[in-house]
Image (tube, rainbow, N blue to C red; front, side, top):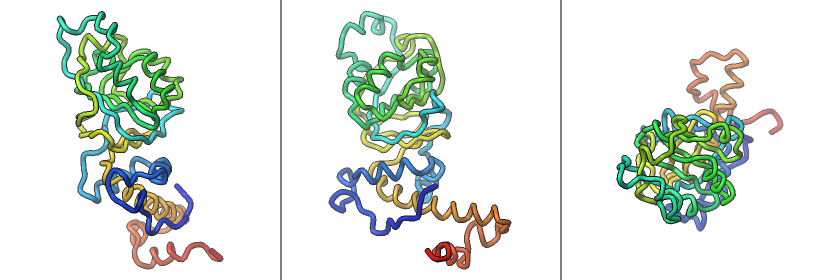
Length: 254
């Protein structure tokens, strides 16, 4: 829930839509609203497949996450190619991805929903943290899960597995469109997470979704107070014109 400051006329940087419109106010707003609210805003715009179902936070104390997607795609491993010696190459796509994620970005990995091998471990996650990453998301598993449980970097995964990634995953592409938990994620999309999970916001919609999500939560905070005071659902949720009038008028003396 948030305060009731006016956000009418919200525009991004230079008042433009698209990639240049994502000023810091967009990210600040998305940090203050729930993934439930964000998915409702996306649903109202016709987008029904935006929540990365099945992913859970690895550190319950670090669940709030907002940042631009940096994507990494995996295909199934092949025994003659995916051997331990490949990690001697610092340009291995997995290592290169970690060293390329910028401050405020979220590493999002497509592991085809396979959790029988890890997609990342504690050392690489620590490097992401030190690079200023906003977090990491994988529809695969992680190893070193006790370490992740205390790591300051928000991290979401479909499971945990001690087996190295090479047993199942071949990292292949950086910064290409991927599917993560069967949700399309494009480089630069905005990833929003809280204790409930992760949602992907198409970049070109991020500013308007952030604006309208704040307003939705303000209204729902008012509706919640009405229901707690004994109001019936009819006329309150969804609000009728009288309820909206009282909401807009604010508390006495406001």
